[in-house]
Length: 93
Image 1 (cartoon, rainbow, N blue to C red):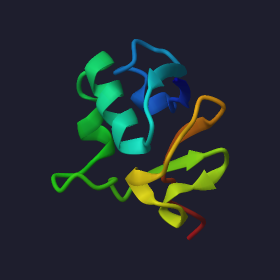
Image 2: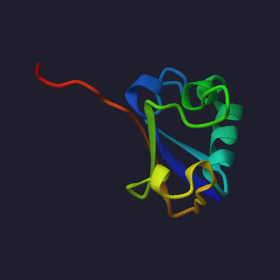
Image 3: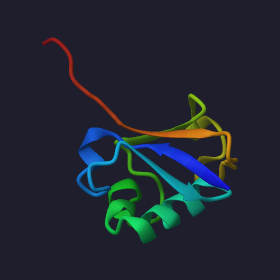
Image 4: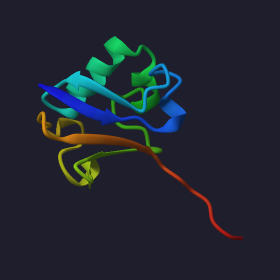
């Protein structure tokens, strides 16, 4: 079943400027693999060398942060919307 994944601006160069892509996946780990097949190079931008989400990448399923769900094992279904959001840091000094 196709899952809609929202792509942030910094990753759109990998997805041919698409702000949304669709992939077939049952969980987030499968989603990353399916995206890598369609858009080579995206996996290394999302996962570190140990296969975990990079610290500066947040992924939300239907608005819920996956770090508070099941991480990369979080199940996803066709009605779900997945958002990849780069972490933002900064402030007023």
